[in-house]
Structure formats: C-alpha cells, structure tokens
Image (tube, rainbow, N blue to C red; front, side, top):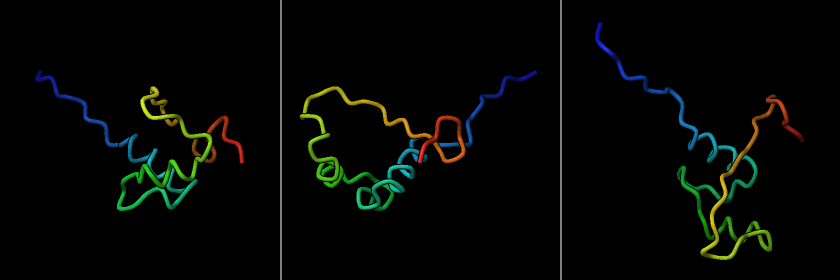
Length: 68
C-alpha cells in the first residue's frame, strides 16, 4: 500500500490575517499586512524594533474562550 502525504486544506496564516482584518481593517491590504499602519494603530502597545515577535493568537467567534 503506497503512503500518501497528508496536505491540510486550511491555511492558519490566512485565517489570522482575516482575523486581524476584522479587528483593524486598515491594517490589511490585498491580503497582506501593512506593518507601518499596524504599528500606528497599536500606538504605545507596539514593541520596539528588534524585539522578539509574538504569535497572534486570535479566537474565532463561537470558539471556547471567545469574548466580545
């Protein structure tokens, strides 16, 4: 029996970009993050350049732990 490689049908990166677009629409253009606009939108909450990036962990509406 041949072994077939599993290929996921979802794209977590695209889901996170869509979540960001819902939160702050002006930060996403043509499916890509506008980093300078995002920094402006975050204001004092943006980290200094050179800091270790953190993963954007956005919960979807209806999922456990989602808050409005």
